[in-house]
Length: 115
Image (spheres, rainbow, N blue to C red):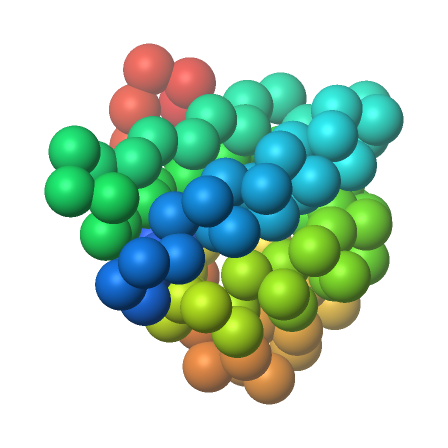
């Protein structure tokens, strides 16, 4: 399986929803230019305290391109929210190094409709 799936979770600081939404819009705009981004959907809970981003990329290279592409706006979001990531799939050696440096572990693909 080459596709990489990511679940990103943000816990927003109280009162920062408007600023967070503006930053999210910048991330979405940047990601819309990436041919390897297959899914990039943002969900915010009714209390405006948690956001979950569901992401799918064509392959590990597409994730690396994405990480570089959204680095600026994502850094701003991380100033007003705590971020945790779950990565699903079989990342390349290069992506594994980046994930290890971020203290994120990948969950390798086991079995499903795709294989």
